[in-house]
Image (tube, rainbow, N blue to C red):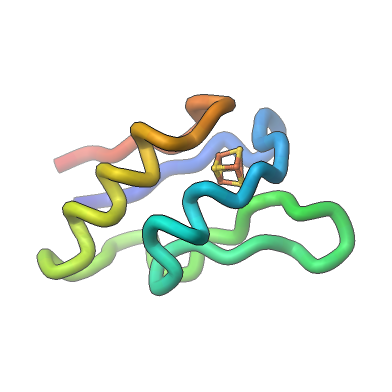
Length: 64
Ligand code: SF4
C-alpha cells in the first residue's frame, strides 16, 4: 500500500490522525496533514482505510 495525500486541499480536521496516528500527523502551526509513513505495513492498512473514509476533504488516496 502506498499512501498519497493532496496536502493543498487538507482542511486540518485531524480525523486521519485519530484514525491512524502511526501514519498521519499534523503540522503544529496550521494543522495540515503530515504523512509519517507513505508505505505503511499491513497492520496499518485498515486504519488508513478508516482515515480515507473519515477525511472530510477527501485528500487521502492509496495505491495497492
Ligand atoms: S482528515 Fe483529511 S482534511 Fe483532516 S487533517 Fe487529515 S488529511 Fe487533512
